[in-house]
Amino acid sequence: MLKVENLNVYYGRIHALKNVSIEVPKGQIVTVVGANGAGKSTLMWTLAGVLKAKSGTITYNGKSLPASAHDVAAAGVILVPERRRLYANLTVRENIIMGAFLRKDPEGIKKDLEFIYSLFPILKERSNQYAGTLSGGEQQMAAIARGLMSRPKILLLDEPSLGLSPLYTSEVFKTILQIKAQGATIFLAEQNAHKALEIADRAYVLETGRVVLSGSGKELLANPKVQEAYLGVR
Ligand code: ATP
Image (cartoon, rainbow, N blue to C red):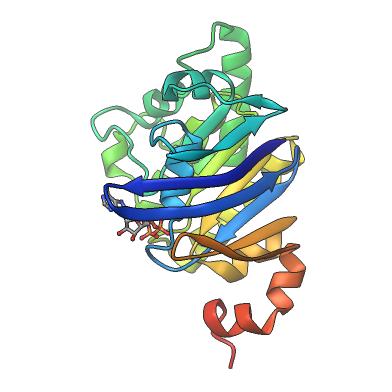
């Protein structure tokens, strides 16, 4: 289990995360929802070891996460950042394989690539195309595929539905459930609160850097405050 306790993160004088505590149990989907600027990406980048917290602890199975982003990735905590960040001039296959850069088991890599192509048949079709030629939805799938190639223990997904059509959004959420079914643990940040809460075992609402509500996905979906602020229900 990944456990965050009393995390405080600053950008200069901006206090971006304020005493944030969350738990991501093994094998579950935990989601954090919140508006633009609430601090979701900051939380993700801090978990990934890129941003440093001023105070607070992040532990994985009771041990502190390593200090460097590289070592955090090696420990199996893998970030799929917002806005994809693929290499436009490499092929789709090359981008996906890049996720396996820390691995030394060619047979396993081959098997995982086949599994990933079964999750995302469109990526198989387009495997020799430059990533820059993919649609937004396809790029998002390739970014998730790249994350999966590292055999993550915990997959951190930052706004996977950002900029996607409703059809692709549904595809991406379906895939997240399939990844969970394989035994992965998923921490998901989303502005698309409805979809995210539907698939979440546990969920947190982040407002201006603070956790203001938490509960099961179902509980938060039924919560009038969440409905009003994030689900467009009045
Ligand atoms: P979004 O959905 O827009 O990415 P978010 O919930 O992920 O929003 P963050 O990007 O984590 O929110 O931003 C949290 C707060 O930190 C915001 O007030 C933002 O303006 C501020 N912030 C983010 N990045 C920086 C930065 N590099 N320098 C200064 N302030 C920043």
